[in-house]
Amino acid sequence: MDEKPSTRKSPEFCSLRYGLAFIMHFSNFTMITQRVSLSIAIIAMVNSTQQPGLLNTSTERPLAFTFNHSNRSIREVNTAEGMAWTGQFTIWAKWAPPLERSKLTSIAGSGASFGSFIILCVGGLISQALGWPFIFYIFGSIGCVCCLLWFTVIYDDPLHHPCISIREKEHIVSSLAQQSSSPRRSVPIKSMVRCLPLWAIFTGFFSHFWLCTIIITYLPTYISSVLRVNIRDSGVLSSLPFIAAASCTILGGQLADFLLSRNLLRLITVRKLFSSLGLLLPSLCAVALPFVASSYTTTIILLILIPGTSNLCDSGFIINTLDVAPRYASFLMGISRGFGLIAGIISSTATGFLISQDSVSGWRNVFFLAAAVNMFGLVFYLTFGQAEIQHWAKERTLTRL
Figure 1: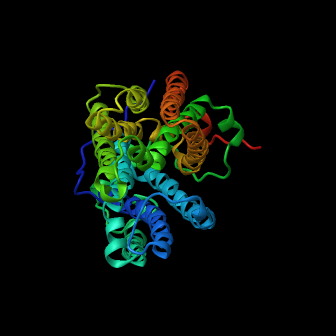
Figure 2: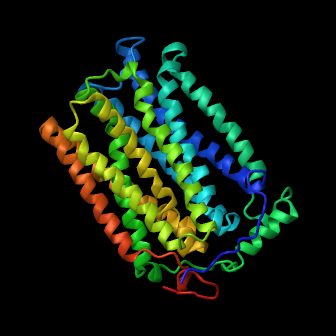
Figure 3: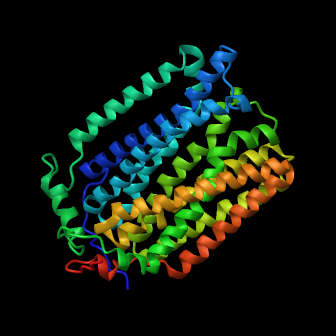
């Protein structure tokens, strides 16, 4: 049975914990803009040496050497940002009351989608108008401001924050009283490996990132090859899916916590409901894409809906580690992201191979395969997913290797 968390009233959007959520939103915004800025700047640098003033999202084979060398920088940025992203869940384990976890994490996480929308809209324009170095100057400066806010405002837990109100501190501490608070001395690896609810989360991440990576990586290619649209002149068009994703992330978090606070659904039911919506709906849209390729409007709508509906998973298995093992949330989020990274590598490689064989049948196979992976992840999560704190994650439970 799911334990009913406290429903004690406390101020929300004027509270410190929501301030932390918006700072993390800003942090995720900054990280994704810097990551995408690197990709945009690389293209601009290469093109400026061949055809000055021209920014194109496609490159020819002679440029492969340059892009291979840029991969090291991209990997280093991704590694650093991955640690920052997973570290946020350590903070939420001590700051987010159970009935507000979906809201707080969705507000923070939506910064990545909003950042993608902004950088795709203005990145090319900045490069053309001011030069590619200004992409780094502008978004690097924003990152410095974000760091200043982070080091000034973010604390490990509410007990040691100098600016938190007594009422809010008591509300957070009392709502988390049922969770273990003793410092962990070791990570129970063996118990984690044998835990099917964890594997359900990992499988969900793998399925989710499989399709998301395809959309993020190959969206410009699909629009250019299928819709015959010049991405250089349609940055707003290629960024629309990400503003939809940011909106759905926040709305999904609000709806999930509304259902919990009103006791309309159990916690595990909410997690499985939003996981189902986040895996099933984008799969249906992806399967439909090859059959509506002749309709420009319908194709664009489906491309917008895929990342939008996919981000409903943020209120499902994405934050499920906070439910099943809050003490190890950061560590487990790192493992989950690792599964997502593996899925992204495999899916992007498979997509490139399939569309290189035959464009029409290739895209159809890409979307059918992505839908199949999503369905596997959904069935596995619905079967083995849980929301109770696992026995090895509770206080005074220690498993040694």
